[in-house]
Length: 344
Ligand code: ADE
Ligand code: ZN
Image (cartoon, rainbow, N blue to C red):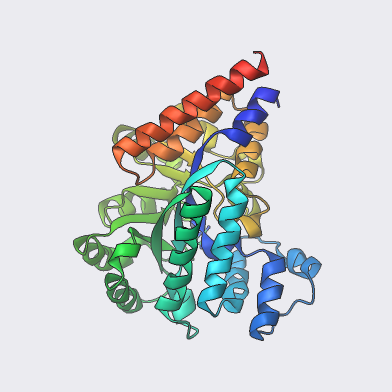
């Protein structure tokens, strides 16, 4: 990797658009919260937790992800989790985040929606104040649970509309097609929420299509399998629908055999509006810049492509057009000064 490429990855301003806050729970914090809250875990130490992080597919991961988050009980826990993430990624040059949370994974075990949201909102306010990071919240519906429960969650979210920008769809994908949630998404859009959905992570290209047509999503999370379908790819290019890809996640969940098979380069070459994100960084071995470094090395990305990925992260965001432009201009400005300093 050239010094210039390294400097770009380390220093360019970036947005993160595909990040599950519960997936930032580091083993150290998991054990600390377990102790603080008197929750029993099947692990004695950090090494045992990390050893358990071997996944053959999305479901393997989800089983541990839902178990791990059982230590999150109080508003302070959600606050601490979110502040820890923001402090880490502030060092990665992150200036804006649109983060997912999974309320049903908490309300299902007796933790109230307000406890979760209160902790996230106070942490995001602190992150804005102290680290200069702007944020939007995306509330995901768990697609393995019934439509009725998603409606209940939506009704609660409507009481907190000022804090939640968008709705999303996550959890087990295969066998749980987007159209199961057409009515929930229609109601959410009617209530004023923007829509996104995980699609084409393990599920087929068809799920990307139905996310667009039935859920009216403005952005697709992952979207890898869309590249299997030439007509769909052409449509995504034409409509410049953002795809939030997550290379290390794909590797660890065996969606790809190696990083060289990551679709990020193919997506860039096709003219798709693709960004690089970390998904569940504590579980997948890397935060935002680790994902940039991974694709740069494995795919031999040119420096210009690193700059494009950083700009795409803002272009794909839900910032207002003026803010997007300002952020993208800043990326160019920082890249230019890094180039001058690298002597290239
Ligand atoms: N929930 C957390 N991470 C997820 C992922 N990568 N896919 C689907 N659901 C998730
Ligand atoms: Zn995800």
